[in-house]
Image 1 (spheres, rainbow, N blue to C red):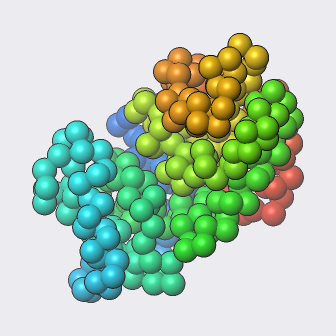
Image 2 (cartoon, helix red, strand yellow):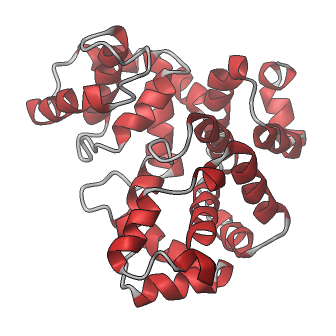
Image 3 (cartoon, rainbow, N blue to C red):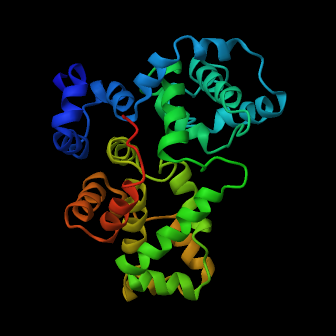
Length: 291
């Protein structure tokens, strides 16, 4: 609570402690507020008071509204917020996604934004979720949701280059099978693993993601690839392209388990592996979301 109540002081002098807190997991009762502070969406909202309400009252572009409507029931259909068609959860999800298409009409709507917005709505009201979504789309994953998906394709190639350093065995196998990164990492990255990992792991990954940025997404992707395809034993059942893709679609529960996954991600950060070195050089050109 002291962190949130004295956020500027903590960010200026004790950012390492904030990072450690996020790595250990943000307490559930504080998670929604913490994500808003970490992402800078709280400041964004304060700078744009009334903007969401203004967008909420506008009718929206029918082209996007129809697509959004069709996607609502697909987002966490067993969660109490979204289980009822037309329930408050689906209504808020519609409002947030519609507002984004009006806020960024040149981008419109991308289906991968729906699970992102849904996770946010589980932790905060619609207006706060909207500005958090804006920060994710503009600061954390810029270009991911544009029509041509150039940014996700570029990051796919970066992921593959990093895999060469992290797990030459997995890299060689995927190269041999001619499996393009876009085939397996698109949903991982665009949905920030919200459709891939168990729920407890999703929350821990998002805690670190909001604090440290996209490098967490890269690290998680590399952990999954290394522990799925990173040894000759693991490749015995992945002789062809089809078998390999099936394995990547049905990841082992063990490697997605919260404690194991977070430990691996943290270790790579602390040990100064290739992901750390790459993202450090990248960070020189990126302004942290909270600034």
